[in-house]
Amino acid sequence: MAAGRTMWGGMAMARLLQGSCFPSGQPRRYLNFKLDEKTAHCSLDLFKKETGVIYRMIGIDPTKAAKNPERFTDWAVVLADTPLSSGRHYWEVTVKRWQEFRIGVAETNMSREECIGADNCSWVYAYLQKKWYSMASSEMIPVDFFGKPDRVGFLLDCEVKTLSLIEIEKAAVSTIMTEFRAPLVPAFALCTSQ
Image 1 (cartoon, rainbow, N blue to C red):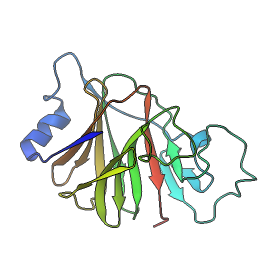
Image 2: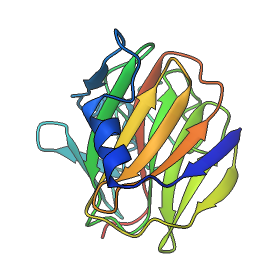
Image 3: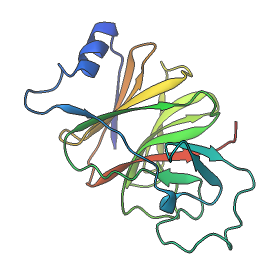
Image 4: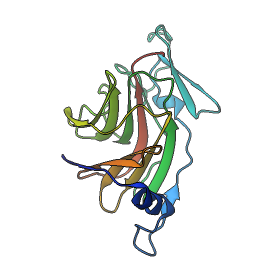
């Protein structure tokens, strides 16, 4: 994985979100998706019509959870239901109540025994111990200029193989550049119930 960190000012940020930074004929898509309950670890509860997730310290007893090979077994991870294989896609996530988490993208066939960011099938941004990191293949690279906003944006460009974290309030951007293999889905891991 090669990770680049770039901080853009407000005007560049506005062009990024308005699409003027994209080559003509290749528009960015605002991504609407739901979380896929079949993939959700038994300690996660989905709500808001499968668009929100809560971590429960005491979840469903794993022996009582429906047997499903798509379910994450060892980590509190859930994947989205919308596979992405081409184009540019933007989505935002409200993170103000979460204390530690990972958000990014994963290959649809990644191991359900791994956490996102800990293998070569997922690329994420993690907020751990009040600091941001980009993660892939268990490599953590600090993202120093980000704070703890209420909402963050994600921009996936399948053509140039980048995933960007956007701190909307500060107009800051961090980008992971790597070799994605499609199809990918948005991916989420929670570490606390806060």
